[in-house]
Length: 62
Image (cartoon, rainbow, N blue to C red; front, side):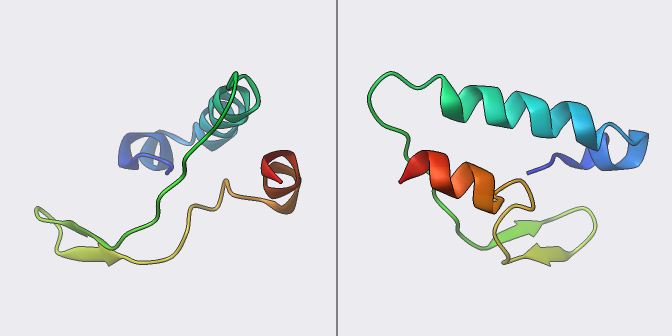
């Protein structure tokens, strides 16, 4: 997160808003997983948690 198309088109704020809404509207539980990801076409490896996982979101999950 965010998806590559959002980064390229500059729609990070919209994707961040959608992520926050999804997390805060969960009825009982939210499971967030972070695992390494390899983007085959570019060869990039992603190992860091999403930039959307801010302290405000983490506080909501506690």
